Image (cartoon, rainbow, N blue to C red; front, side, top):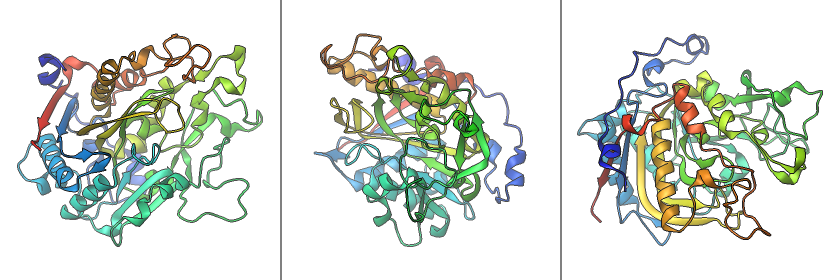
Length: 408
């Protein structure tokens, strides 16, 4: 369990409002929601609300009624009000173009719950956001379709993806696949003008192609929404240590992400791996369109992954029904709390903490002859580095964490 100090610690004061953002004004978006007030770490730095309902999930089946109760409690506690509509209107109003970033990796169970997606859409509409101004999206269209998200959306709500599907190169700005004979519909692509240059590339990239050093933000973020809600899932991760809110805001929104984690199977230097998630994630999340528009984080902990994440292709992929949702505007504080929840479950299962995993740590689950780890070390330090970058509060003594119990 968390200590009383961790549970009740007060949030540190913020250092004034963020500066006005010239890009916002130049982008042509209406900007109705004060991006400098809502941009990361948002109006509630260091504040994390966990709402637990023992009846929210049973035998992998989610309970929509319980999830509605959890969302009402979580949003009201986060904002500090008694009315759920008021809580949602704190962030969203009529005229806002609002994105909802889902996570389809980990299907069928360890994904952004469809019931939660529908609940978010419902409350956005209650707050006055028109269906036509709601855009549900992810990075890869193929994964998105496989989870069935397009088929559950209410009439008028749109969907789109950044890329058609995964490919090793990940350099095309149109999001299409090289070998495709036709253009995929509902593929937004990436913005040529908004990117982060990092001085490393994947071994398979053409050394004469400068695109190998750049990761561009999807046009869904730069041009098509004014704000967005991130719905990450509670999971451990082979390279990043954990994949929670921050990784959903980095790898889920830009191209050329494979260069951040290159497994030993690619024959890299001295047989080692190249795992740069620790620095790649802060570099991407500090890009201004992401930082200014990611106004709300709801971590889906109904069904979590404590080992073998993010997907079922890992031999040790292990789920548990945790039955919680987490609410925050601060992704750093949220991820630090989520990381501790995962480590606590791992300890219960007799597993080392995620930060002690990896080929070099000699703590891999399984035998020495058949290691289950893919990278030399996992890198959850991206959470602390994002704190240093001003994206949120990392210090547990400065995190105001509240756990709310709803009786079954």
